[in-house]
Amino acid sequence: MIILALRTDSPVTELYLLHDTEITAELSIETGRELAQKLPALVRDFMSQNNVELNGLDGVICFAGPGSFTGLRIGHTYANTLAYSLSAPIVQKPGDNWVLDGVGALIAGENSKVI
Image (cartoon, rainbow, N blue to C red; front, side, top):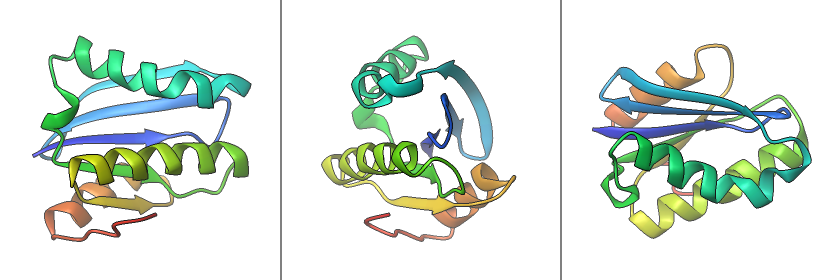
């Protein structure tokens, strides 16, 4: 299972690529107020650098918050659009263990469809 996890609650955007339960790549980059403009290309380039096609994703995890309302909304909108276009399951999780909790939810068959 190939999973993309993203966190957009602060000026620093975090992306994680997982193969099953193992984080195989991660990126933290300051996007600040340009998040909406930069996020699609940022994800595309991140996936490409790790030799994974977007259409190869099996699931999406998004950080649920708390954090910047606008940043969370931008990240959730992008994640929802990506999951919908790929017919991939999507979940959101809060807290310090949001990535691992999200992986567990996807493996258990959860699919919020819209977060």
